[in-house]
Amino acid sequence: MTDLGEDTLIVVEHEPYNAEVPLPILAADGPESPAFFIRNHFNRPVIDAESWRIEIGGEVERPFSLGYQDLVELPYTAVPTVLECAGNGRQLMHPSPPGTPWGLGAYGAAKFGGTPLAPLLGRAGLSPSAVEVKFSGADQGVVEDGREMHYERSLPMERALHPDTLIVWEMNGAPLSAEHGYPARLLVPGWYGMASVKWLTRIEVIAEPFRGYFQSERYIFESDSLAEDGAPVGPMLVRALIGAPLDGAELPFGKVQVAGRAWSGRGGIRRVELSVDGGESWQEADVHIPPSPYAPARWSFGWRPDQPGAYVLAVRATDMNGEAQPLDSRWNAYGYGNNVVQRIRVRVLSA
Ligand code: MTE
Image (tube, rainbow, N blue to C red):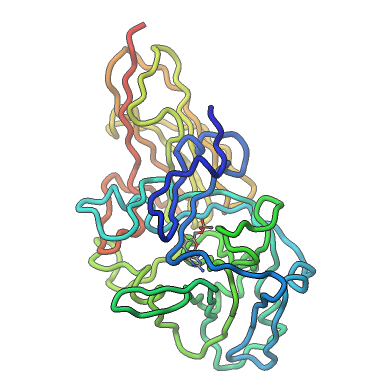
């Protein structure tokens, strides 16, 4: 296999820069993916870590701020996590909704290192009026109607105080890269990536639910077949993807190793099934469950085709909640949460 590093990303948009991973990385060995997608709403900010600080304030009794050195000296924990964009698979919806035209590679798996948020909120002392926590990124730009803003999102208090919600400064043991949020970002394991605000500058405890653009006008379900209008996008839905073989592959007759990754933001993966007849019948794949419920499970299936010819392979995961991937694409106005079963066409050649 060729080099699967950052430079193998497939550019989806140049400005702001958005890029997805090639699907073979889903079949690569190792717990961390050798490449990681990049999703930006605005151009990347330039940050001087010497003068950068995170302020923690709002509905708290003792507001304070932290510099980079203060942050990295806090208690450390590392969490292996999948991040997937809520718009992953948007291109597979018909008609294709507006938005960044992601294929299936808005995905990455990494071990993020940082400190839990809850003790910092505890140090600030939550006021009784606190209902949500809002996170601001240093990046800014213009959205529809010429409105200028920073990238900002909020979390309900319960998720903000969850022990696995972290402020992270490391990815796979190295400082975060500029693209992924250096000096520090929020990490909300199990949730679609929009929640994990990069280039964090302010954490504000608020007394009313946040109604900002990226909270109440985007990352919501609209005209959706499953969710009510305005329902927020939250935890990642169960999904499996095939990293090998690739769509359109021509395979020599004999045993074919079909492999990929599966994940869910709702407690991890219970089973993965493969179909070699386009979804008519299903067989159990081998699944290697990782220790972290947020990390992707590696799955594989040793397939021996009966005869040469054209086949449609499909993969379907079920999570610990018993939720299985749908056979048909979901549709909604902004193209979120499309975890439809992936199908690929392959041709098995004559011996
Ligand atoms: N944070 C800021 N400040 N600005 C952004 O545009 N994009 C969000 C999230 N955090 C974003 C952000 C979205 S939609 C996703 S999917 C993830 O970052 C992507 O993280 P990555 O670029 O490290 O893969």
